[in-house]
Amino acid sequence: VSMGVRAETSKNNDSTNANFGGYFDKVGDELFLGLVYITYEGENLTVSAGKQKHPFKISSAWWDSDINPEGISESFSVGDWNFNFGQYIVDETKESSSSGEDDFLFVAQGVWKTGDVTLAPIVLGSAGGKADASETSGNFSGENSNGYFHDFLVVALPFEVKLNSGKLFGTCLLYTSPS
Image (cartoon, rainbow, N blue to C red; front, side, top):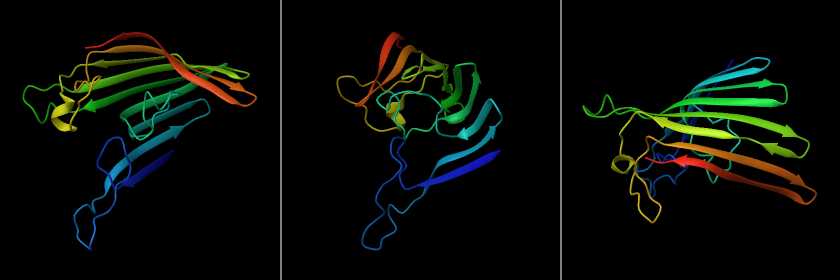
């Protein structure tokens, strides 16, 4: 069993740092908790609970490494396969809004590696919730913006092929059902 805590200087969900205030003032000198978790590691099973690093093999173009989910993750191995699962609370709104519902994200992934090739099919889906992220998380604008995070299903195939001069990696989107 292990535990971890990480303090950060940024309150943003996609960055772990920000400059402290200037000219000896106290503005901007806050610290925030970026990680707070407990992990159990057995022979073929790992379970983590709290605000944690995700266990998934996925490109940072899909999931920024600074975004740490809150909930429970499980990982285990069977033969040549590693399986990763996650159940996360995306936005807890029931307590703060009479009409809100909590948003949840469920993730399942199998990772298969043979030689220089790794395939990691993944399914991500949300359930519940009607939260509008643009109300709480800043300005969502631009051509592909979407301030809502609920009622979707994504099936993708991250892959990696090691080559003599480096590696080729990417993610093929197989199916998506947006809200």
